[in-house]
Image (cartoon, rainbow, N blue to C red; front, side):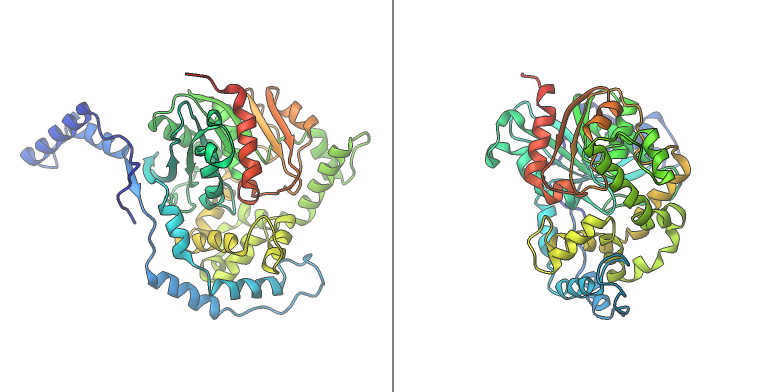
Length: 442
């Protein structure tokens, strides 16, 4: 699945080339069993190498996918006229019919039209897309997806952020874009050891940005991407100057306590009460997938065996996203098209990452203290965009307490959990507005 890439990183330096050459000569002269500083240096350089990557799955994998979709044994229809029992049978039947005509090769072409790479960090291959802007003084930005997402979530923002003048914006707002696949997701390696949780991934992302030569950059994320990005901010690696989140961790301790008690505290503002109600619904009715993956991800064998089972599990991430996707398959114009959804689910299927991606929940639950939405005590500049159909719409009052150096806050008029994917134009503008004050001229 590797191939040439026209935007490959710079070649080895003269010194590195000499070291490699010396190591090769030494190896051939005295045998591979003899160690030397030159050989050790060669191994270090090779481990740090950035390799071009190309997406290509065999026809047999696509044929097997179609065979399994057609052979699906559907369950009985739900007993209720709504989605309270889960993804409705009609939605999954519509999805199965649409999958028969889905064009994965088109998705491959879209991915391969961008510069894709692999590099080994902390013993694991990390996949990433790296698009450098043609505009001078572009600001480097690393954007991290979550579950059940992938780099496909970010494809719609590549053009607007790296080439703003082609999308009605100013050259001064350009970004160099780095979009990695989380460990165990997409084209990144699957961890075989414990410990690949948000703090460790955050360190890997800092290494990646350093390896790419970026000495001043910003970071963005939602869902797990927010957890990783906020841990980057806590670690304060050299070069990171600010972060943006579309799913912030801002819930105050007293709100968490009242949620456990089942009664909102008195004196909440309308925005705070709306967030409380959203969180109460999620805690009571929307956490099923996370509880299972927190505790028993390996048990989800059916996701690795049934494409329709995998699709249903992915679609049922959160109530508002699930309903939006159902409307899309029913023929209504929505933020995501049926093909958008199938692009992402097909990526999970072909890369066989249903279980490996779920293990991130287990690893986080067993090794990282604190709740997902608990403030982490971030001191660096933070920008927040609160989307109305996210799991909860963080009020500005909570964001100001959670992030003492809040440099931007905005409530989006539309959009949900998959912000960049659903509303790419609005998301791109939020990136420009969020970080504009931190840019510097040549």
